[in-house]
Length: 544
Image (tube, rainbow, N blue to C red; front, side, top):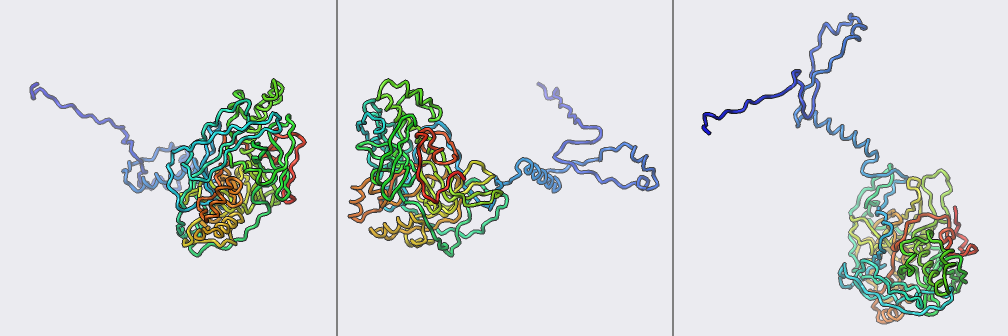
């Protein structure tokens, strides 16, 4: 095409005739004051009848300070409307701070997190995704329902790779229908060198609890303040706790109905329609509930069901013979144990003011265990700024409380301790440690591990129940029961750095969260007879 034939397009700008424009913002034009319109001699009524015109506006540039100022103001107003509590804070009393862990989803495959209680030195780093095989047990089971029990495999204290997921248990044959608890084998992490926290000023938070991973401020470099600890309950087996108890060569799940020194009356669980006699056991005949993993049910019709959703009476009536009833009773005990582990009940209220927002308690039945003020607790999560792995931290429990701002929730408040080398700061003397940690520290010093001490990492930290794994057990009290031969050999050689219990955690099974119950018998529900009783110490008052 000839260049002479080319024609440029006409550019047409379309705009409003009144000069209005669309831009990032406008500002009113200051119009000169008309003397004639400001005279007070004008008739007020006539002025009111005069139509009001829209003030003239001028377009502001993007960088104009007035435009920026109004963007900030409008943003603040919008934030206050959409989020009355900034930064995710939630109103509550006392300026407490909590850790937050998302609730576990229902109906997921059970996962067990390896949890060594104290960290020990000189261990080989573990591969995070390796799975440790479990040995198979094939103990026979007596025919009588009251004698049914699981066959445990010994809990090994050797170093094993981290388990990411529970292995499928061996298939249970009808002739050998004993519960086969799976031992939890855990890695041995090296002790973390305790870092001195930088002093911070504690921020008062009158608006309430802050979620996420924030905690109370760390200790100043002046060192920890001495604490006095007390404990009313035994350090191992307590009335009302769920335990594995030995019956010949097999095991069953039951609840400690009463305790007298080293002798315990254990009440089997399953279903109240099946009469089962209580049995007397010693500490050596029992294991903490978290020492073994509850295997899946054997009956196909009970899979993916909850304990309270099964018509147990009809199921037992339909059983053709004793072996069938035995199988049903065993599955009932498994499902009842999982149900109990997903609930809690509080006892001995300490605060008497009915109008108080926060109510404190001396203790609670926490899943399978019984805990109280003064106990040491294993933890699931810790604030990232501490640079302390959760499995190496232990909580010295100072308060158990509920708050009206979080109905149905229970919180645990206390001090975090960690086993470190003796040259680290914030070392705590044994007499100022929680009872269980004091016993652990004194025993390790007595058998040659004298360079390790407990340090105070942070004070007054509040945890939700989902952040608590369970009770801390002193090694020399539990390991002689779990693995006596290896433990005695290690003590004789004075090589005890790798000696500590391997335990599962609360709510690791496949269950549904039930929350707070009135008392322990209410938690047990139909898993025991309606005439069942639990003998508790005088300082325990349930149902407050």
